[in-house]
Length: 416
Image (cartoon, rainbow, N blue to C red; front, side, top):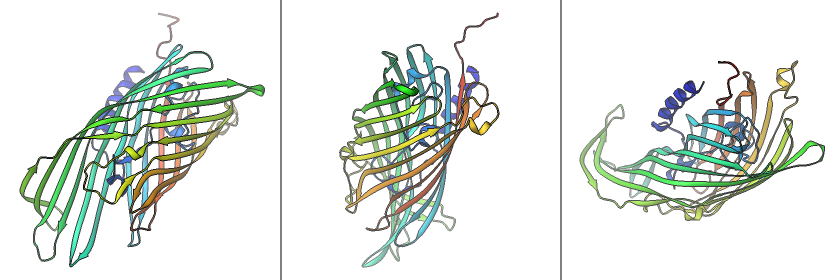
């Protein structure tokens, strides 16, 4: 089992690190790109709730939960996104499929450990517009790439009720953006290409407290803190005159590499507080509040004048329900039913308009195998942005599928 999991990890690591297009959002033009969800699909189906904890699922949102694991867990998941983009000028559609995470969680007595890989942000857009400034001018903007994150974390149960945890993350990736301009009656256009190679460390701390109440109820509370981190961005710029063939192939002339300053990109500090109540192996409901200092964010280059950042807030409400986890007569009674809602002020302001993002989620945890493994299926409908103020509204639908596979790696053999 161990050998198979590490082979799968090696293969999927190659897939994630390679250039997968993880977004089609035009808002990925700004800041660090489109910030991706950091948790597993069982948490995502509850709106992204990070306070939930049990002994068979790895909770990547809250490192303090690692010590609650009782069985080794390997988890991997991916999402297909269907995006409808609307503006006052028209509509477009886009579809993307990407790996969201792959990770392993290890129970070590009072300790728990986890390691894995996931995307932190993604850039992916293609925008073309025409402006009338005396003469009609055609401008095209494209971008791709993103930042990936390798992490290793640990947790310790100070008591049966109190756990503390820490993640250390190494962020790396490349973001490439282009802008090209064509003028009427001019055969060649001009193109500017900017490339940023990004590297740096970040951390995430969490504390989890659980308390048993009457009637077998359990209350959970958690606090999390991710301090501000600064990533090194090695920047390069190339300008050229270009033309396109009938098939869209670019032909570049007079290439010229320009020196641009390397910069520091800020990963903002984040504060998380959550609380929930539930009946073990039956149901759980919780609420979480996340505050992030996005006012410290900046764009990768300083020539963007219509976008600023403010501190952001996110509110999540979600939960799950299992009719009868040990039912022998009904498979669907053992299914974990999940649902949630989230609302977020992203902190991005364009043309003096806040960019907000909200969505509703629901999902199923389908039992498979003999050690509490399951397939997690999630559905999300959301809306981001607006068609007003010359902006774009995104209506998106996400279909997520994840595997949560459990095994006993360090079980003592009874027979040789």
